[in-house]
Image (cartoon, rainbow, N blue to C red; front, side, top):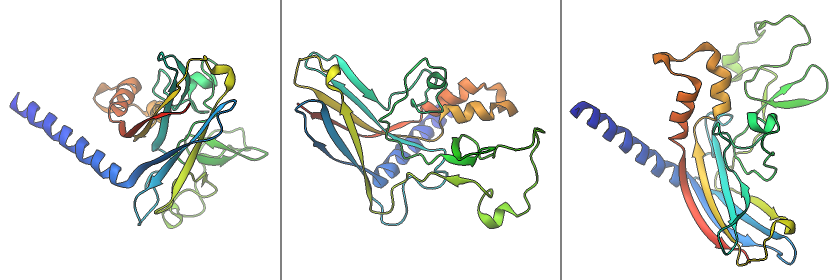
Length: 241
């Protein structure tokens, strides 16, 4: 039991230090309320507090850094959400199974700094994809060896990232509009804003689960463990109108 307690203490300490490190890199700046004569309009400033590199950094195609926004009226009725998670723990983007199946609506105002892979289609333009594997013109399904070494190119050829990270000492504005049809006529309306970071999205864990996990873990087990490590770095409450 003593060993288990020690391991839990080390995990808690590691999580706390990781949160401190991330807070040194990300800032939740001012919230500016715009014209509210009809709809509710406001914008949120997300900052890179470092002067050395972009945030997120490293595996930017896998790291969720997003805003969770909830707008309520005077009696606490929720009239707007963005950045909320589906039952699998994914944000409601195009890779959410619940959005893909039409069970939940697409979060059209989602602010997420994750930079998705962009891969080529068989014809036409490019599309977001969870794993960086181009669509083949050949009906045979197999991975062709690359004619160039990936090590020298820093990754696979013909694969790009849709860069959404914030440059050193830079910032991004997240813009939100709450349609007037959603207003309940019970002001004041308040927005709860959280800046959330997460290591891996559950949809990625689901895609790679075909190879299996150690210790008999399922994709659900791994996803829940990863979601437990999601951090709320900063939180703010603002009266909009």
